[in-house]
Length: 116
Image 1 (spheres, rainbow, N blue to C red):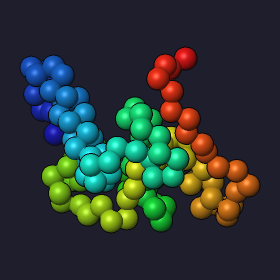
Image 2: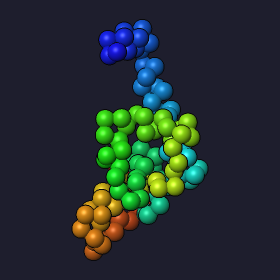
Image 3: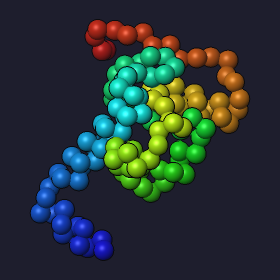
Image 4: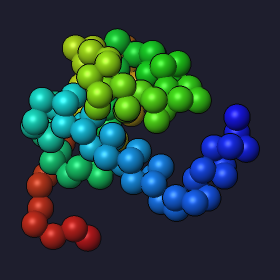
């Protein structure tokens, strides 16, 4: 019942988004097995990290229910063997490799103390 959900959230501003963020943080920790780095280039900036489906199919699993995906991982209802942490650039390269095969370039992470 969409109207009931809207009414419930109207009396609890920020609740759903805070809980969703907590589920995402816990899911990322579980998928990374405590190591918050991209498995390809070792990028260690949490805002750049994403959960990647190693064999593809993430778009279908997340379609319309992305919040449920993170919640199920965080609550350990979904296994993480087929998932890995990638930074956004490496995740884009992975998607291209699934479609076109091996690519003639790679992403290199150069950790810096200052962000431009």
